[in-house]
Image (cartoon, rainbow, N blue to C red; front, side):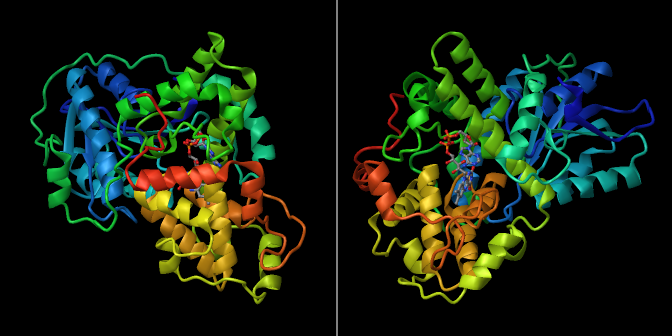
Length: 471
Ligand SMILES: Cc1cc2nc3c(=O)[nH]c(=O)nc-3n(C[C@H](O)[C@H](O)[C@H](O)COP(=O)(O)OP(=O)(O)OC[C@H]3O[C@@H](n4cnc5c(N)ncnc54)[C@H](O)[C@@H]3O)c2cc1C
C-alpha cells in the first residue's frame, strides 16, 4: 500500500494487556481492495493480535430511508460472511457508531478508521479521536483514505476550479496509487467473544424492526453488495464498455451503474480501474472508451471529493457555487417563469414535460437515473420553481431521498454543477441568466429519447428491466 494513504492521528505507549486491533468500518463497507482493513490486519500481525471489525448502525443516519438501509445491509451481510471465512471477527451493533466504537478501545492496541469525506462523517471521527486522546494513552489511531484512487488531500491541497485544474494533478499521481494486490492474511485467528445485535441473515426482518424512515421502498431493481456490483461490472465490460464513448445517450443504457456501490464503499474505485486496465491490456477495450470511463471514475468523481473537502458550505444554497453564478441569479431572480410547479407536483411527475416525468419516475421507482437525465431533471426544476433557492433545496431533497447513490460527494457536486460550479458562463437568457440551459429539443435532437420514455414506462409496469444485462 502507498503509505500516503495513511494518516497517523495518534501514537500509543506500549502496554501488555492489549487484546486486539479494531477496524471501525464506516465509509468503506467491503473486504476487497479495502486499504483500511488491510492496514488493520498488518497492525494486528505485528503484535500477533486478532482483528475486530466493528460496524455500528444508527437508525438516524442523515437523510437515510428504507431504500438506503436495505441496500447497505445487503452489502454488510456479505462483508460479515467473507470476514468469517478470513477468520476476522465482526461485530454488528444497532447503535450510533461514534458512541458504540469507543466501548471497545480500552483493550485495543490500535484503532483504524476509514476516511469519511462528508461533514458528519468527519465529526464522528473527530469525536472518537478526541475520546481516544483523552482516555487511552496506549492507543494507536490511524485513518486510511481508501475510497479514492488518489487520496483527496494528496491530490490537491485546495478547492479546484474545475476538472481542467484537477486533471493534470491526478493524472500525474494515479499510477503511484495502483497499490493493492491482495488482502493480507491474519495470523492470529482467535475468536473474540463479542456479540452482534443481529446476525444479518434476514434483512427484511431486521429492517422491519428498525425505527427508520420507511417512506421510500427498497429498489426492486438494484441490490447491494460486492457480488452484485461485480456481476453488473462484468456485464458492463462484456457488453457496454466498448461503446462507452456513446454512453451520454440515456436511451442506450451503456453506463456501468457503479455509483450506488461506490457510494456505500461496496466496491472500490481502484478495483474498477484495475479491471479496466486488465480489459484494455488484453485487447478487450478500445482506448477512447477506456479514456472516457476513466475521466468519469477518476477525474470527475475525485473532483467531487475535492469539492466537499474544501468547499465548507457544499450543501447550502448560499455557499455552494461561484460569485459569477450568484450574480447572474440575482439579476434574473424575478424573471417570469413560464411554468411553476410545487415540490409535490414534481415528485409525483405531474408536469407537462414527458422527459422530466420519465426521469422522475425512474428515480422514484428504481433509485437510479442516467447522468444526462440527472442534468436535465435538475435544470428543469431550476426553470420551474419560484426561486433558485427553492429549486436547490428541492433538487437536494429529491436527490437524497430517492437515489441509492444519494447523499454522496457526487450528489452535492452534481447539484452545484447545475448552478454553475465547475462549469462556465454561457450566453445570457431568461431565468437561467448565464447558467447553462438545457431543453427538450436538445434531447430530441441528440438521442432516441422516446425509447428512454418507453423503457421507463415498461420498467414501472414491470415489463422490461432497464438493466439491459444478461445476468
Ligand atoms: C443533478 C445531478 C445529481 C447527481 N447526483 C448524484 C448522486 O446523488 N450520487 C452520485 O453518485 N452521482 C450523482 N451525480 C453524478 C452522476 O450523474 C452519477 O455518478 C452517474 O450518473 C452514476 O451512474 P453510473 O455509475 O452508471 O455512471 P458511469 O457513467 O458508469 O460512470 C462511472 C463512474 O464515474 C463516476 N461518474 C460518472 N459521471 C459522473 C459525474 N457527472 N460526476 C462525478 N462522477 C461521475 C461515478 O462514480 C460513476 O459510478 C449527479 C449528477 C447530477 C448532474
